[in-house]
Amino acid sequence: MLSVAFAGSSDLGLHHVLSGCQSLRKLEIRDSPFGNKALLANAEKLATMQSLWMSSCLVSFQACKLLSQKMPRLNVEVINEREPVESISEGIYAEQLNIYRMVAGAMLDVPVLVGRVEEVEGIGTPIAPRPYVLKLAEQE
Image 1: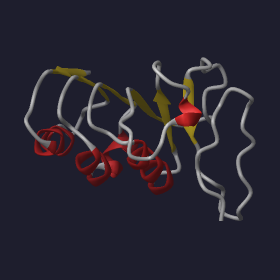
Image 2 (image 1 turned 90 degrees about the vertical axis):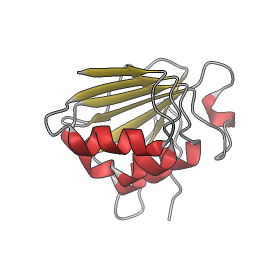
Image 3 (image 1 turned 45 degrees about the vertical axis):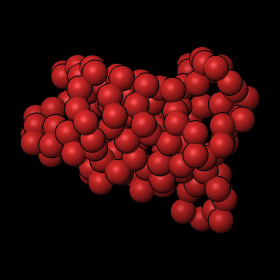
Image 4 (image 1 turned 30 degrees about the vertical axis):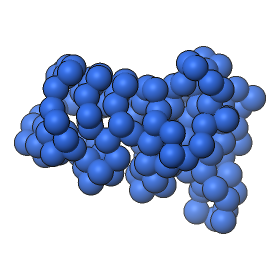
């Protein structure tokens, strides 16, 4: 596990960590300038990791949706304590982001303040959301 705080000056730092640490399984990042570009460019690396947790970084809600669509076997959770997750617009940064691989499906016991970005299944049938989980993927 690697924990990074108050480090870096651009997305390039996160790119180097994700592409250079072959055996990295867990990564925690907080208060760093890493954002959408590095996260989306290294999506395949996230599929080999157990989890990525980011707090106070520059990842937009739109990037979370794109990541969920690009990598359907990843569970992408947005945690927002200041405002309800369902009221977040796409350009707003996620306060916290938790990304992890799904082996047996998504966790069923997430708190109310967690919104899970879900992927629409291949035939256009949405995954049934639980009452406290926000369905954010667009239906085709």
